[in-house]
Image 1 (cartoon, protein in one colour):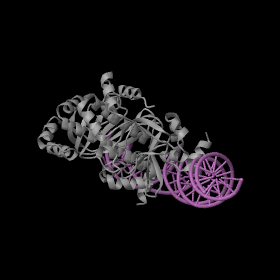
Image 2 (cartoon, each protein chain N blue to C red; image 1 turned 30 degrees about the vertical axis):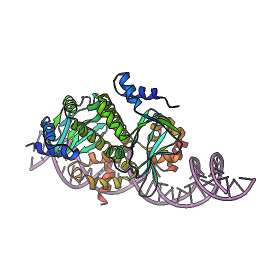
Image 3 (tube, each protein chain N blue to C red; image 1 turned 90 degrees about the horizontal axis):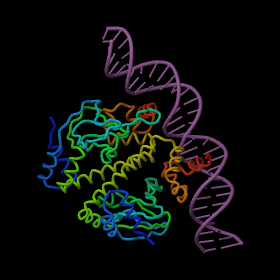
Image 4 (cartoon, chains in turn red, cyan, brown, purple; image 1 turned 45 degrees about the vertical axis):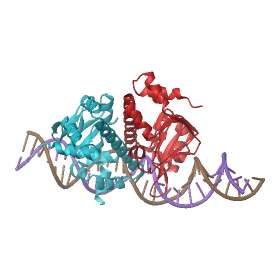
Length: 191
Length: 191
DNA sequence: AAATTCACTTGACAAAAGGCAAGAATTAAA
DNA sequence: TTTAATTCTTGCCTTTTGTCAAGTGAATTT
């Protein structure tokens, strides 16, 4: 069963607003479930999901010029999942968003999001806070990729995302860390 | 001389709003100049600048655990320059923002930005568009760092930011690309 | 249960990049 | 203009990571 209270709590943890406002905002979201290996978004679709992931593990990936699947990012519980380019710019997505394990949560569409922005000033702050949060996460990931060896990057993931290592297959993690399967397998052995 | 029309045109290029609105928004910005090697932001300060860079070249950098200076990002003309974490979360900055060449442009403070968000609904879209744009840039830089060799990253910078290669010293570029000075020097020779 | 596929591991070798140190070359300072 | 700093280049050698290919084991299909 989806539990809307977890969304309310998530909203309250992001911005300082009244419980009432948070309830009203949460109530405009729609519960959905995604089965293991199913997609929230496919290449060439225009994303229309701003998705609060209540439970489960997801990833975004795309195919590079050599046709290899590259995992761009993982999403864990209690986070907003969306493909920013496609969702906000209303353009076709280059990436997929896929459930690694069965996922549950709540979504709203682009139009619903904008209506909320209009009707609930408090939600604007929420939207901005989410963007800022994700942006910072992206920047810090950037920094980590450039200034650490593959081994350090793996150790870091071990600390920050143990759920990922538990449920995602090695090849997803390898391309996410920017190493080959062989290299990751060897790193893992040494630890 | 600072030229406010360039800011108006920048705003108009980002969001579809009236010339009148764009003028009013641009008029709340204050002209500033930054001399070569001077700072817009220093470590441990709380950033209070949302800065439109009209001309010049800037960079953000920080010191890693080994005490080495790491260039995180370059900013070129006709872009908004800000340190997102410190500016939006009102926390002390870990990074510096420095002018590589003499810079001119227009700034507003955090409070002025929020007043504008409140008074000018059109500016909200602008603010969001800038966040989305920078976020996408960060993601795509991320992807490039992980899935390309140092040589390819350098070639890419050659295409996307020739001004950077022209004015920034090799060591800034090397740390930005995640390689040592020696490696970058060798790459450069081979081309 | 056999066959097929998939996920992961491992070995041998190659390529990419780093560490260190010495030396040019350029720039800034005295 | 000479000295001093800084920036960049280069040689030698090490470490890290990649490539390719073979092999194991588990899971899925038929």
